[in-house]
Image: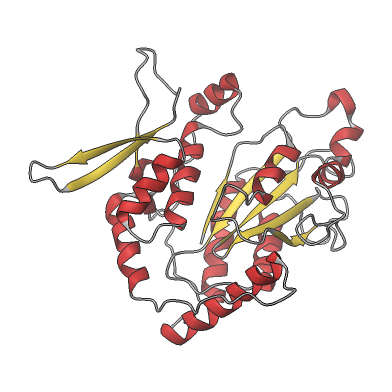
Length: 317
């Protein structure tokens, strides 16, 4: 289980719209809140009358109360992802994970009534996104020193308790955190995240919907990402690098990142291992539409049937 904490952002509603977006991101299925600071918070994924602006205003309440004294970068964002070989966690499991992470990182310590407002959104089987605003009800900022280290330590405990793949401290499974220079550049370019983080998300999205290596690269190209392949004299593909359009160095050359520089699990050998593993898992049953069934309902039924098939086809503990 890998937590990835991004540099603080400045637009709560922008992040919410991305997390709930499904029209052009095939990997996003049935986005909904699995846990929050308030169990009755309005969820745009479940309540047709709920809006992103209302949810953003709810999360931003203590930030807005500070007016001109509020921090400009007030949005805390952490994704938590399980390994490819792990079982599919339920919403209840993910809710437990979310509460333990916000407690461990100092965002919302257990029993602290003045804690930051936060939600956990699930839009894929293998991960959630935690979103919090960095002003407490008492108008102070949370104590989140070394939050990434504490999140990693808590995930190691969760892995053991939930029967997930055990990651070792410092084993290189976590994605590299952006440097200060990368963060400053992202701010200058007006990006919500660094180029490395944006590319990592592009590659994850392309990989999530691809059945094989060829379609993975086709999907990645369709994302608008520049791709450079490293090919042996024999014609065999040895590796790949990606770059964002418009992201250039002082010599106006594209800035390339190899898959392994984005995250250890995105190197070409690791991607090939993933495709090999997925081919060994039985195909889920065809999803037959039922009269009067809504799109979210079909998505939930599909997830349940896919999980049942996976449980029959492999050992999960």
